[in-house]
Image (cartoon, rainbow, N blue to C red; front, top):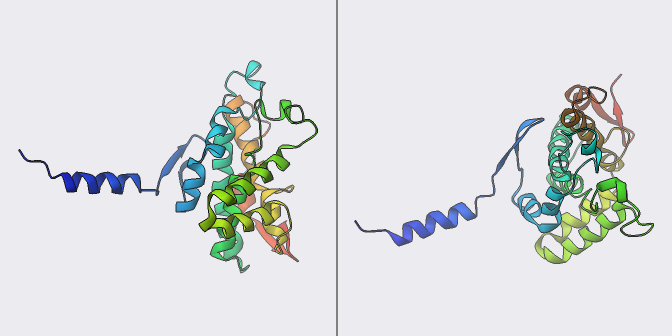
Length: 219
């Protein structure tokens, strides 16, 4: 029985370059990774290290189920961001593909500055420095590692730091209505087994709109 080495090599190469992955999330079900570059960012050690950082620090000592990680959270927040952008775009507000990618990158990377035990050691590992500032440092480092995607990361950094001209994009990342909060309320409730944080995430996202460049909920 002969082996077609070239065929095996081609299949292996194709497999390694298949970045259209699906994640089975316990809260939302199947989440598709929307973009090849976002897949590369998820694979990067800066993001992979979030698998080893518990979302709720030492809360698992009281609620044994609270073993979920920052990695769970950023993937879920990215999923909600994709849905929110689709809703806002459907309501007539222009969001380019480049802006969508930047917003997804911004929410994916918003927590990469977290250290061990999350907020429990927020200002102790690096004295007086927030995880947001460390996240900015990491994003700057990624710009050097991915020069071909420098513009994507720069745009994401502008959105993250609230210096992009469309302010509502930053509000989707950090505000009273952000995708960060919508995810952690639902996710933390799910894994701790409590009901206090269970909210109508889909309903809230479906009612999002933009008025005078501000993120709002329809009356």
